[in-house]
Image 1 (cartoon, rainbow, N blue to C red):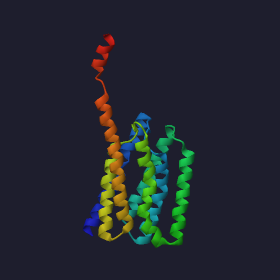
Image 2: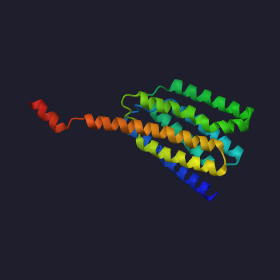
Image 3: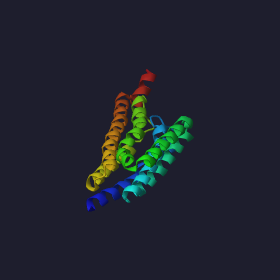
Image 4: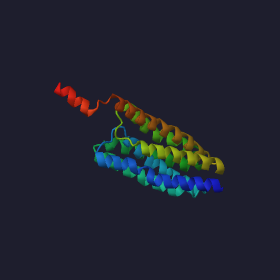
Length: 208
């Protein structure tokens, strides 16, 4: 249990600071290219469901991180909206997803808990899709997704130790999705760097 507690505490600390580079990047540059507002809205509903799961399953270490990520996703959504993101569809999607999770929990809490890790797939799919479909995802912070990959891996470890399928599924899905987005951002960054002509050479060509 010491391993599980350590993994959960470190993951919670990472959650506390992991989203900051993304939010700061958008606020500083006004650029949200490649950032999914829908994923953030879905994230609010999903994390609230994790809070309920934590109380129901007695996984007390899950609750602080879930509350923190609820606030983080809300802050990210607000940051994207402030730079021109279209909120109506995203908010509607988040509300509908919240209703689905609530009804599933009321109908059968055990089944809902087992499926909760897989539910993260619904949340993160728009983020992966948007990052890969955007020609230059310049608004996406690779640092945030690297931290999220580590966080997800730690929650997977926690899930294995305590025997919680939802945490295990979240660990697998979160790690894979985070790596996919990080690879996209860094890959585009390398291509742009390789194709960039040094400013001195540009000036020389213009003079010629």
